[in-house]
Length: 481
Ligand code: UDP
Image 1 (tube, rainbow, N blue to C red):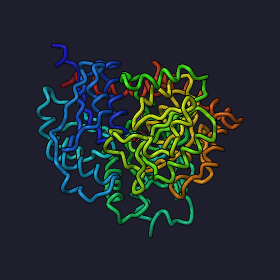
Image 2: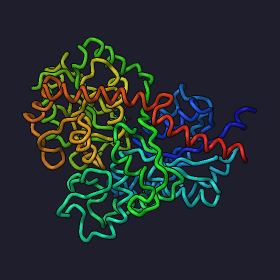
Image 3: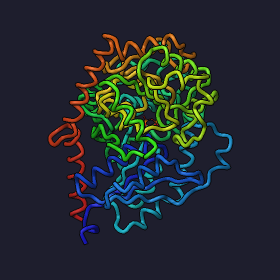
Image 4: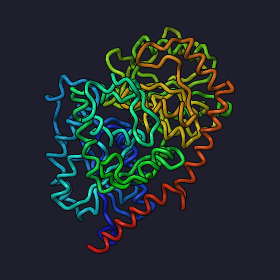
């Protein structure tokens, strides 16, 4: 039958919506644009699967040639009992799952895949697939700046004494603006930490990939992309070909019945008048910071949608593994009377909102975001300027890039994380972006990027061509087997 003659690709993301979403988009594109069959492998543990993940992967809109396959669950709860949220638990889950399951699952597929596409944190696949003669491609789901930094990390590690954050000068990576040490990603701040060991392990294996897809496009990050393209021995490391194929973002999603009122409310607002406030799939604020944010929004008198989460004083990624599955009533932790006082002006949504539907709505005119790469791309695709509120991982790097290099975002004067950002400052920045001259300039830039993103993905566009070249090679490989 036709199914078994189609070329077959396997795709394997690490856990977390920020990884699953872009790899799933790529999988869909291979099926719908290029007539591939895709096996989408999902790492599962003994923990319940977040509703947002189920809604995406089990939606009836998933094309029939895209097979979602859960890897048999591994129970790592004992090992992770005392490990704080971060990269370490994620990598431990992946390590156990892949060592136990990947080989047998790949061998059990009805046909041998022509290639496996992984993300950065699944590099155990290189050895496992090496034995099976399946080439492995990596999909780097963050910025090119982070990719370049990551390729450079082994060199930096060799040449630096002490911590990178104590270096007297910003870090110089070819093709990138100097990276301020305070913007460096969390994982590389303490080199003795497990977080660093895991990050280092995975990035140092990146050169083993047959190719690296990146979720970006030429016009968005021209300088770092050209530096990588023109230099196959980037920093003396044999760098695999880099294929910018983005922005691949979640499309219009089916809207849950309970979320419909959000869109009805947006329908009644003026164009570009609503600020959307959301901190990714896992972001949380301290109680103090959440109170300041709420008052800042209220005092700005701008219209807003706030995705509220139970505050967490211990971690900025307190909701990462629940992806918004939270029953707490926001009235219980937001300032007394806030919901009532802002009625009509603001809308408070509990834990998880249909972000893409909101960003694509004409009434949405600003996005206060933790600057996760997917949120960033979604904002760009829909032409929405941003207020940066970096929380964890590499988000401070993204915030700086967006505000100072791309020109689509505004930072708060005091950056979140170091100290509590006060309500007056939040009020000022919100007004400036939603109602000020500065806001007009970054909105204009965001709309330009929206158009350039669309062109990049259309037939003949840079990202479309990038993917088509790899697809062609895969088809040839399939046909000669
Ligand atoms: N997201 C969403 N609703 C929410 C929060 C997040 O749909 O209330 C989606 C968002 O659209 C994005 C992803 O979750 O696609 C978050 O990915 P990102 O890379 O921005 O951040 P991460 O969660 O990985 O830190």
